[in-house]
Image (cartoon, rainbow, N blue to C red; front, side, top):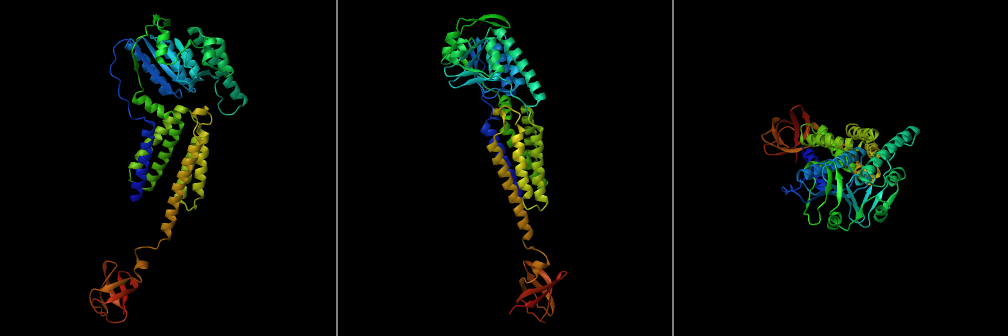
Length: 441
């Protein structure tokens, strides 16, 4: 039971580490109700995922309800999921409020899905030292003929999509097609010259000053911007969006799957412990949700499941650690295969996979070694323990009486005739519930 409690504590520490490291469940302080007008700004940094689509579309709705002058999306992304990108661009194209995408700070980029989001804005701006481009869809799996055909279809669809967006917003459709087909990328200066973005701004204040007085076309009709002296309100992700954003990280999904493996095995080894099983079940569901968001490789999940079988088998079957080594290898290979079809920034860290695999292997090797040691320990109860034990005669033995051995009273018979009360004795043999003893002189 002590081992179960210790293992459960380890699970709690791991799960708490995920939560507080990612800051997922720590809900941000709700923004106070804002007065009508002004500028609403949101920060989008990282992968374009379902959480990002939910965040941006919620910000569009709230900014519209607050009758804000404009919604500013401060963008820095390497790209992301196609479905999430489509949800964002649809929301932006059908918004009743002017939307400005500002690629910032210096060193930021709008790559892949970020190009589509930038093109869908009413006004697109970049900070000095930023770049935009490389929007070609990434191939899935091997490069067979069938897969090439699928990628070609996806590419053609993406080209048609971005050219339609470019036509709607009056941007350079030819460069957009090159960004999708040839993965071209350009700096902020080139983007302005090629009519990819509208302007370069040092910061948000400079941006609002430069777009003041412009007229843009929204779903509600032409809108003239009055932003020079508008107050800026920052709208943050809510708790749900932060949690979804955390689950969009494949490394978090792998850690959750590891916690699930620990919880299930500990619960199986200690039935009724409850806590490891509960944490393991929750972690398993969250891991599957994370993998569903990322569209992982099923073969990778199968390999991780096989590693779980190996770990359990090495505890139940005397495999002397061979199965645990196989489990570590299966776990690491499964983790690598899990997201090998995804974009580079949506793949599991190999270093993390190896670390978790080695840590898990060490844990189970320890468990197996402890089990083998326990099998070799001499029994602490029964005839083998009593034979040779020392004690004291509680009554005179002539030849029968009572003795006190290993903290208990026993009926006994003296082998050498008479033994006086209080005399030290030694157990010679055990006959059922009666001891045969002799005096120690």
